[in-house]
Structure formats: structure tokens, C-alpha cells
Image (cartoon, rainbow, N blue to C red; front, side, top):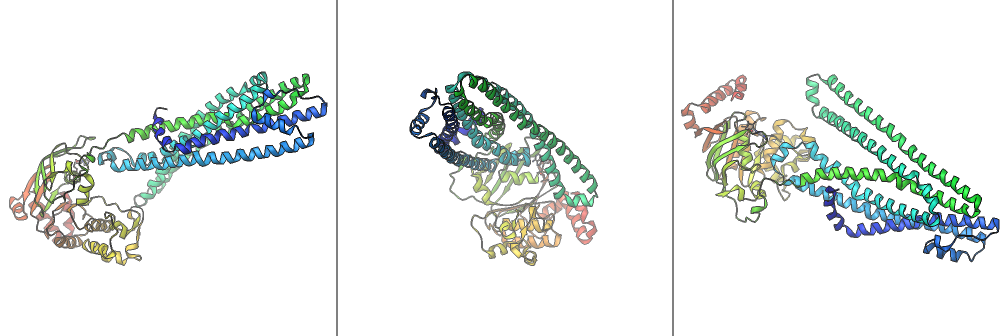
Length: 615
Ligand code: ADP
């Protein structure tokens, strides 16, 4: 319950809805218990009419409203009393229904508002957390918190609270009315109800456990199906359709078994409630009959009690599942709280007020970096100065630390040692948003949203660009002609993860997305790997003009001879092993020279091109 206390702030935020909701619940139940009283009264009247004896019931057994009604209706003859009472029962039911409607309109609507606020709060938190958080948390788990956990919490702030208030007020009103009429009969009649509540609680916990299992096996089944669709090409090319189907069938079988087992338990739920209620009714009728033999005036009381017992069926059976709804919500809110309390490593707010522009000068000063969760040291005492407007090529084998350099520059992680400066400012002091807006980054792994190509290219801009701007960027990235050749041109939808485009096309759309910004530092992380050498050269040549005067950092495993780099760096195991211009590095006759000669030979003999991957 401690975990749920954070939700009190939300209840306070929507206090008017919440408190009026509580009042509506109380009012609806107040009217609900009038119906059995009026029915008991009419039956009593009938008994009195048939026997000719006056009623022995005192006014103390009724509340104020009921006494007022009896006082008024007693002025009429018996047949009119019956008609008036029947109409009153109908009116009371309508009023009750109206309050029930308002109760849902306030409490359930409030729960939807809270759900909306909570989803936004979680999403905002996701956005503020840094890359290391995403490395250690699975996407499925993150999705679950914003969907499943939030909806379980909503069940608490909405239905569970509503049923809880509803059942406590209704039980209180019924029991008070019953005690007023006959204490002994009340205790006798209610005796099976605690047993019913306990039974329901236990059956509910079994149902809860079983539905968790069903949920888990359903999640396995969905993941299985999802992966099969996403990886359909791999499955088909490795002729693994049968194996995948077998795997799916196994998961499906587990799901079926769990679902059937749940259905079996659920099947005894309502019969057990009916049994207990039947027992209470039986006791009422039996005990009532013995009382009526002694005093016929009790007939009305028996009828009234039978109605109360039936009215109590729902609230008593709701105790169990309201309790389990609250338990589930507490577990979910605990998971949400754990995650909301995570503080991002980056001191985002510390420097939120910086107003000057950021320059293009970059300095890595004795930078070391270790990935916290794996302990891999990706950079060791790395020093590099790139003056504003310089173009630098970073070369290295896979795993040498190239991407880490890009990610540290974007401040995805805090450095473990040393400092990084951009435009003379330590990146720790530059607001994250400003820093990232200043760097036009093309990542290694391309990601396109399920949207049009135009919107994918315009993604990083706060204002919608003109089609001409989009086309210009696409032209620079050598993708304009190919987009125009598509049936819907720039309006072509790139489906989930851009399935309609080839790897190379996706890379070029991603480049266009970075180039459209037009300002800032260019940071390309091996983003031409799926592009053929000829197109690659054209893109680089196009860039030549574009990056005039701009700082550019190109990370690659290939040598680009078309562009005159001010500095080329070869990196291995997180440290710089070679540094200089193209000519200087060729003279050094190290890795760069070796790669250059290999690449040259490969270009002359295309079969040799694969040799390059050795580097
Ligand atoms: P490159 O871009 O040159 O291929 P990276 O910078 O990606 O190299 O990786 C450098 C080293 O850091 C490698 O040993 C790699 O396994 C490790 N590494 C990269 N990313 C992560 C990560 N997110 N978590 C843990 N280790 C990582």
C-alpha cells in the first residue's frame, strides 16, 4: 500500500471529481436500500390487511425518510398504498441509477485522467534517461510499464476505489437496516457471508496466479509470433519454417493449458457465490418462517431480508477481487516508482540557461571511457583536437572504439576520465538539447519511423521544411532520384522499420535527415557501409561543398580518397595508433597504408573488395 501512496497527489489533483464521486456512491446506496424497506412495508401492510390486525412495527425500525413516507402513505387506502409504493420503488430505482451514472462519470473519468497523466509522466522520464539505461533494460519491459502496469494502476484509481466505497457503504446501509429490524435474525442470516468472503478471496488468489501464468504465456506467444514475422526472410532462407512452427506450437500449447486451467477455476467462482447466497436465503426463510408462525407480522421482514441478502451478493463477492486488484496495482506501482526514481547520469538542468552559440572546435582531452555494465574499456587516454572547419576521418577495426567517440561527443554517456570540449565549453556544461541539436549525427544503425519519406527526412527540424529543402537534402545524400521513382515519391510510407527500402537507401535517407539541418558539426558513424562505392564517392563529393567551413567527423572502416581530410586518425583498442594527413600516413607505411593499398587493389579488382573487411 506504501507504493500506492504516491497516487494521492493525483487524487488531490482531481479532488472535486473524487469527492463528488464518493458522495454519488453514498447517495446511490442510500436509495438502493429504500427498495427492500418499502417492499417489506407493503408485505407487512398486506399481512395486516388480510389478518385485520394492526401492525406491531414501531417507527424506530425505520430511518427518517422511510418514516416520512409511511406517515404520508398511511393516509391512503390499501390498494392506493400498493400503487404508490410500487411507483416509489420505481422512482427510487431511477434515482439510484442516476447516481450510479454520476458515480462512473466522476470516478472512472478521473481514473482515465490519472492514466493519461501517468503515461505522459513515464514517457517523459523515458526521454530523459540516457543510453546506459536503454542498454540494461529490455524494450518489452519498458513497453510493459507504460501499458500493462499503468492500466493495472488505473484499475486501482478507478474501479477498485469505486467498488471499495460502493461495497462498504452498501454493506453498512444494509446491515444497519437489518440490525434495526432484528438483531438475532441479522446475525443468523449473515453468518455464511464471512465464509463467502474468505472463499472468494482464496479462489481469487488462485485465479490471480493462474491469470499471471496465462499472461506470461501469451506474452511468450506474441514475442514468438512477432519475431517470426520480423525475421521471416532469415527463417525462409535457412528453411526453418517447420522448426519455427514447432516452437510456436509448443508455446501455443502452454498457453492453451494455462487458459483451460484458469477457465476451470473461474467455473467454480460464481456457483460457489450462488451456493453461499442460497444458504443465507435458506436461513432467512427458515428462521423467518419459525418467527412468522409465532407472529405473522414477520412475513414482511422475511421478504425484506431476502432482498437484502441478494443485494449483498455483489458487494461481498467484490471484496475478493477488489483486494486482488489493489494488490496487483501495488505491485505495478512499485515497478513504476522504481523506474521514476532513477536519476539520469547527465546533469541536464545544471546548465539549461546557456545562451551563447556553440562553436565548432572539438577537443578530447585525455578521455577514457569504460562501459559500466560490462566493464569494457572502450577508450584509453584519448586525445584529439579538431579545429573549427576541419574535416577528420577516424578509421579503425570493428570494436576499436569509433562509435564510442561519437556517443561521448553526443553526451550519451559521461566520460570515465578526462574532458570533452566543444567550442571551448565542456560538454558537461552544455544543455543536452542544445548540444545534440548542434551535432548532425548519422548513426550506424539506421532507424526510420513508420511515416512518409518526407517526414522521416524532416524529423529533426522543429518547423516543417519546404519540399524543396527536403529534396535538396535528399539530392546531397544521392537518394532524390530513387525517391522520385517510387510511385508516391516523397509521400511513400516506409513501413515498420522501413521495410520497403533497401539497406543502402535507408542509410541515405538517414544522411538526408542529418544534412537538412544545414548547420552545426557533422558526425557520420560508418553510415555508408551499405552504399556501393560509386554512390559513396558521389555522396562524399556532394558533401565536399556542403561541409565547406563546417567541422566534420567521419567514422569509417574504408578510406575516402575523394575528400581532402585535414587529419586522419587510426584507432585501435581505444587508443590512437596513427595520425596525420593522407600522404603522411602513407609514408608511415602502417595500417593506413596497408588498407589503402588493399582498397586500391580491390577497386581495380572488384573480387578483392571483400578483403577490406579484414581491417
Ligand atoms: P567500433 O565503433 O569501432 O566498432 P565501439 O565503440 O562500438 O567500436 O566499441 C568499442 C568497445 O566497446 C568494443 O569492445 C565493444 O564491444 C564495446 N562496447 C560498445 N558498445 C557497448 C555497450 N553499449 N556496452 C558495452 N560495451 C560496449
